[in-house]
Length: 481
Image 1: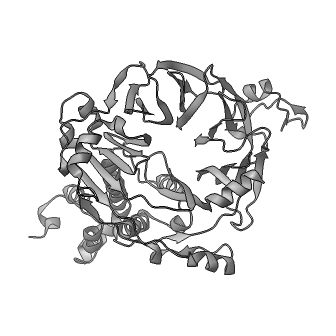
Image 2 (image 1 turned 90 degrees about the vertical axis):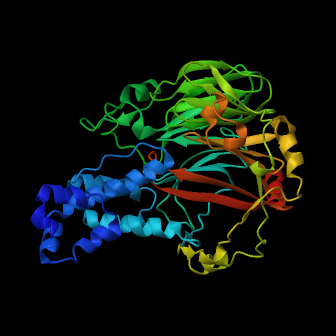
């Protein structure tokens, strides 16, 4: 019996919201009656489908899903959020159905063994660190020669428009850079000092007056302190320094997540700063052990420091050490895998194509290489590595990342450690052998250095990778010159 006859329409609609996109598309083809029902409730059904697609991604990444409405305003907001990172991909969408189809095509492409990508050169100064604000359409760069530069992301990649900059006397060579939601942190040439900058249009009028800014009053035309930054006509991409964070110890590294800045020093000290207002406030000073490497990572509640003996994790609010990812005596050869290096490319043909066709994205489909993860280590001495890496102090550990309960760290000796449930490991609720894996990456001699970053929106729904590849000798010549 046809469900439309046997069941109330409200229940039928409820059932349809559980279908995936291919199945929901086929509902329109069942009969004229089903087609009419599907079209009449198209906005509701496809908005629910959009919610389901985002829910699945949020479930995988461990993030909180966004609630999707059904109005035109809700659709526009959803498109704008995704278009921040992929503007060209999300143009020309008129309804929720097209929105879902576009998302399905993107997800299907990424799930392929060889997904399709494009590359586009963006010529800037000799970049050292770079960040992207996709919402404000800004590319922010520090240089190996010194200086801080902000470019218009929508300008010509071959000749990008410089919106704002600071010279090498203010921001020294190899300055680190952190950026999130309009707030920028960098270390100038003054040792032990971190400067906090914010997009001027996001700063309150009272703070701008205190900083000595004079902006034309839109009512009288007189030059006064800004009354309303929304009314004040501020150039896009302009930043204003909120102040310097003084620390009595030499700073080794810092990390900005949303409006929380964590800083680590060489002298057993670390700090947590709140940058949510125009006046940075110290939240907590942490006492840490000696051996901080300068690499740190944080999530909403904790901060992780790379140390000489592994990784130490602290609660940001209380300052309490939660534990160390260091000593794991129960590891066996089964906890180890290795990756062989892929063959090295002799040239980048798309770069020559880019020079012929300026500002034209070049497909990178032929640049993909599948990597095979093999059990054990490359030297067939996994049992020796298990004994050695059972104490992580045997290697020098650097950058690490946290994503929910997952922790990842890399060593200079070519090993990557992956902990699938670090909270339970620190509480001794699981054995290390059940949640820890090591991946050995073969060392490879190279005269080139690659720096890259992956930019992701707050909800983790879209991302882009950007980076720079440069000859080490070339970089040394630039610095010496």
